Image 1 (cartoon, helix red, strand yellow):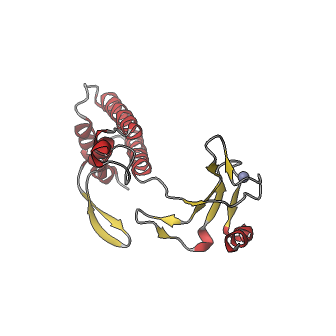
Image 2 (cartoon, rainbow, N blue to C red):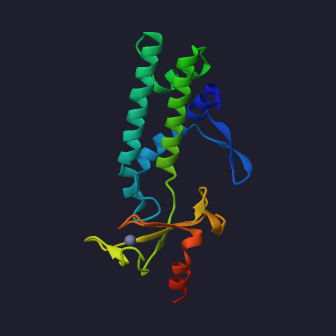
Length: 191
Ligand SMILES: [Zn+2]
């Protein structure tokens, strides 16, 4: 993807593919800022409390991105950096020597990947009461957390992926199983 369109995804409303349809998405940095004040406890508890919570992970990410983007601007132009969005817009529309061009493309792609991962973490299906064939536990730790998780969803709406792409991971012993090695799970679920 070109530097201009990476910068646009970060700073401006843009078109995006979602579930096979083209839709309009707001700027990722705008979305990240909104995510910060919405806190971490989505979908549960008292609504007014949620608004006060700050999502520390999202705030950290915005601070890191701001520092990196502004430092790169100063390094590139030898001038004090303006606001985050102005830096990215200016660089996105600018002409750069090839090594700088490559550097900014890598940097902005990394920003986009981190924002997406923070705002839309992978949804996993918890497998309660099933014993891990590797460490022989169903729960672990003082909190008795569930060991096994099925990675079977894709996209923000949790559509099911094809079963041949499913994997199971044990959070306790880190063992993983691909679909072809999941007979034990089918047996456990049937019991
Ligand atoms: Zn295990």
